[in-house]
Length: 388
Ligand SMILES: Cc1ncc(COP(=O)(O)O)c(C=O)c1O
Image (cartoon, rainbow, N blue to C red; front, side, top):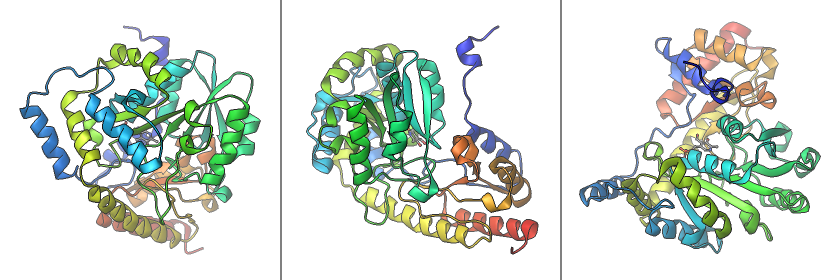
């Protein structure tokens, strides 16, 4: 049995490597995985069960149930003032499949796509399958890890086809502000680029920020393909539901890809997703309150560890502390912290070269685990590096 070159060369995400190591050690607090520990709200679960009982156990249309496509378009009208209709929407099997759909739909082999570094590592495998060349642009702690227009400009070449924007960002938690988006939009328009915008954390932002999509910047909507999903906002990771919102020309032509790739997204979860969008949104606010409380526990706890500094995460549920003062690579540090301190974190270098010197901690974990994890982290530092 010989695997294809495509599979043999497939880039693997280090996050799983760390979680596997964590699993091989007893009594570890794992802060590796970005999955909400909260339950899917009951009214959403009930809608899914009802759909099953009503017999929605067959194929759905490739683009998704019309009523869900309508509900998604309505959300963009209501929340962002963006004039989309159901013809602008494709329902996907998680944001993950939606992104792959768009990479295939937009990028020709050899096209360059720009992403900020550090980045969500799963993008790399999908770009690899699409045959696209990834060009990374560094983001810096002093800019709150927000992509700067000047840096984007420097990375553009005649081969650049698209830029992938991920705000709120995994792993840094950075949220692009309106002024950032205006400046980025100028570069994007000047070079006639397409934007693949991963907005999966758009509902998880802190300190009364208002989320702004790059599609809201004047003159941008026709060149932006928005990706979003239900995993994070409604704690629905296992339902595998996401969506693309894009110009109808893109949707019309690329919906056929969906048929070939997956036939359709499973039918009954789509009813649950429609209930999520059309039902009360208090559950989203409640989850945000919980993440917000945990963010305070984590950021304060990290800043209380000698030698660690952590700026407050603006969005998503990750802290990205600076550990440069220990003089170790982030992988060495994280493995030692795991083995001796029994706390699992992800080395920043697993998110690209610019993540070196940082760790990623997910605070989508219980308050107790976070407190205990931070206590262990602090103890590990004091025992191994002193109070400095
Ligand atoms: C930035 C980013 N995009 C996409 C995804 C995938 O989301 P989904 O569960 O909707 O496929 C994740 C999951 O962690 C993520 O962090």
